[in-house]
Length: 323
Image (tube, rainbow, N blue to C red; front, side, top):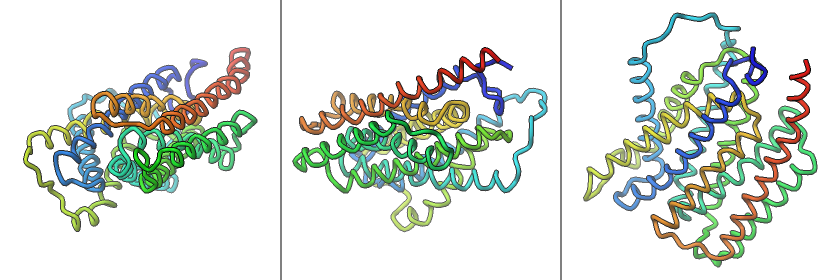
């Protein structure tokens, strides 16, 4: 076994990092596509999340059907049924909250703010959750990250003058961050414990559960959008289902199982960075000076967590090499 691979999944850590980088970049375009969809139709956040999951599920199943599977290889250990059910349910519910609340935040307060608050608050929740649920040390750097993130969030909300930052959008973004944190912590916990979980199956089941959870609400709200440009809306929905959903989530679940929780969160900061650039340059969103200052402080706090994460992991890597 390579010293840079995870014993439970066999995926090299370096490849897992690449998967997460691609996933984070692709996710950054989802909010932009959602903003364009909201502008071109009356589709709401729940309906967009529903079609995103349904489309992603269809594409994943089609890819599995077309892919020629190699000869069956022995699995290290079969995942117990009870744990498999728990993993699938928590992941599906977490995905439902994560993306539905995220789209609601984008609709309420804009792409840049909604994405930055979601992906800036998520590492804080993950660091706290990892400390409580998995015994990972928070440390001085982690505590400073929590404080810095809270200060940055306060600057964004209180200093924005109510123009570019809306409290209801911030609430939805924090709710989305909680769903994301639950998914990340569970994926890492089960990946560390082993059990032969299949990233494809995890992703497909998550999409299926998310679709079923949203169906009653979307049916009452209206499944089909009303628009003067149906071709544009369909193209946007197909893109959202294919790139930042089917592809990105499959890569995310595979990478998150072999990379430490805090590192996962830091790498996926590519999402708010790319989303902010798209929001300002392409969508013409205006960010108040306080919003920019809060954004930089929030991202700087999480970047500090990355440095602490690397320092913490270094002794373990050296020990593994010497062993």
